[in-house]
Length: 381
Image 1 (cartoon, rainbow, N blue to C red):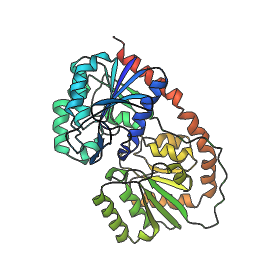
Image 2: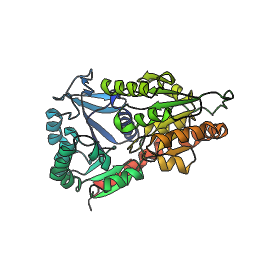
Image 3: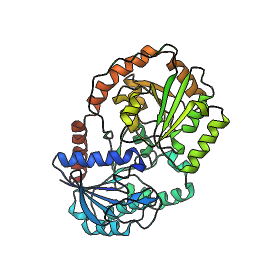
Image 4: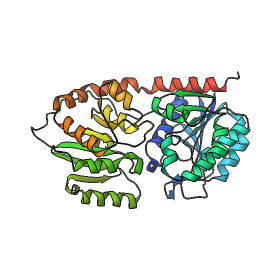
């Protein structure tokens, strides 16, 4: 089976967060499973370009990847070279898998594949939801959606990473079919949990670990800190636009909580050690299709407090691996105080979470689900 993955960005463009790793792991696991996998992507790396040779195919961790030059430096990621190559070669593939939406690589690649009669799976990755229409560029999104997205996506198959994302996407479009398969999440080498003895009355160590952007709800968390009664310290690990980060730092100063916050910046290589050193991972997102960092945190035993808008909320609640909150400062603050008063429950999750995560997010079983999806959509009906 020949599968083409199309993504506007690909590793090592880690500036774009979790989706980069998920797409890379999917491609790598498919190759290991015997599929013939190619990746078409761009040289995008935020406002800069990756240090790669454009328009040339290279092997990246067992996967054939072509980084095409883009001519825009923003999130439109326009790449005429990629689109030209796709038009010429798309019919040699059994299926095309397009990742994310609202960029010219995804939208125009989808249109080309549909015109050329090749089956298409689209992973919206949080970009097709009611929230996405209310957030940025609403007028432009609405126009593109009615003129292009709706008619084209009707001829595509949707891959959602959670039930919540599936419901959100299907409330906006009517695809040919939908499938729910979780993201691949790269986990550290498994080590049995070690019991942690925290000093009595010690401050609870909170961690926000994500890209710093509006939808992640960091403003909610900072606001919540001014209402928390329990002793605490928050570490914020992640990067975002300088202007937005500066506005959050000013917000923290206005709320008189700056002295209880450490801004750690972007963390990649040592992220699991960082997660392990904290008592509670907090992600009060306004909208989140999945939440890779939730699984990463639980894999090392760190419990989570996440909003009900996070795609993994039902999973966390069902498996008793953390707590859910509303997207409000008072809700987050109240939950932090409740959790700080329950050290035994924190320790229970620390012991029980890793074995559950390593079972449920086993790469071998997940890749088989993707292969079934590709086989299903590429079979003539």
